[in-house]
Amino acid sequence: MTFKPSNLKIALQKSGRLADKSLELLTQIGLDFDRSKDCLFAQCRNFPLDILFLRDDDIPEYVQDGVCDLGIVGKNMIMERKAAIKPLLPLGFGVCRLAIAVPEKSEINAINDLEGKKIASSFPVCTQEYLRQKNIGAEMIQIRGSVEVAPSLGLSDAIADLVSTGNTLKQSGLRELTTILESEAMLIQSQGMLPQEKQSVIDRLLLRIQSTLDARNSKYILMNAPTSALQAIKSIIPSLSSPTVMPLATDGMIAVHSVIQEEIFFDVIERLKALGASGILVLNIEKMIR
Ligand code: AMP
Image (cartoon, protein in one colour):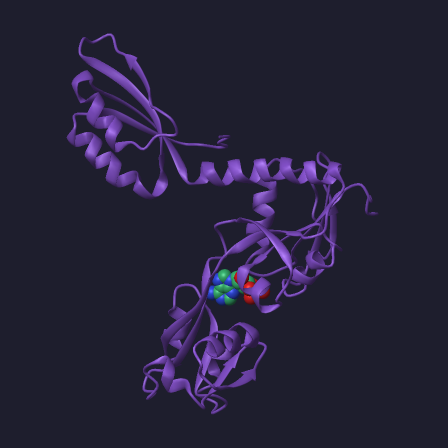
């Protein structure tokens, strides 16, 4: 298989936490490609895009240097590599935070207590930058993996590591002290000017991704309601524009269709029921183009 110079190149994590979700997103936006195991490259059959599968710590530099036009990588990794790239879109997966944690029984209870202490991390750049901003002088111990064990091995007084649920920290007898940064997977672009044809392919890709992300966060609802409740219903549905309202065969009743955000869904449904809405149907939306 060979690269086509006219195709866009996107870098994805080869294996690891972001790998499956990144591939799932490309499939959801209608891209058709084969990924054979251990293959580092795939070409889309129905879109001018080549996919490279790389280590996630290499992705920021590949995009910065223009070797790849686009990449999907954690914000934490972009910050750690101090990559000069253009962030395009947060993608809503790979959500985690880089946090400083100390052993349960540690005497370190506030960030100022870290002065003069040893902190083990795989993210020394972000951690040091945070400490510098807080005027704290601590010694960084760079470790590649299993950072949680560093304090119990006597290697460090604290750690700075990625946390999502916090369970791993608890199981390792650690407690969180503070958050250095919040992270999620990001779509990034190289900063250099691209030929117009490539930029317009990126714009097409962005429209597809944005509409998929918007659809994921939204539900389509249909309900019957008393006409007299319409104003109150409108005020609690922050709709895309205005809801669709249709008269029903039964006098004094209407059908209302609208789109609501997933996060306010249950709250809105309860309030609609209280206003007399019935027969409420809720549908997933596949794509949403604004
Ligand atoms: P991996 O190579 O599988 O360790 O994936 C690492 C990337 O996944 C990180 O750079 C983060 O952007 C993201 N991530 C999301 N949640 C976590 C977590 N709890 N621990 C480590 N990485 C996470």
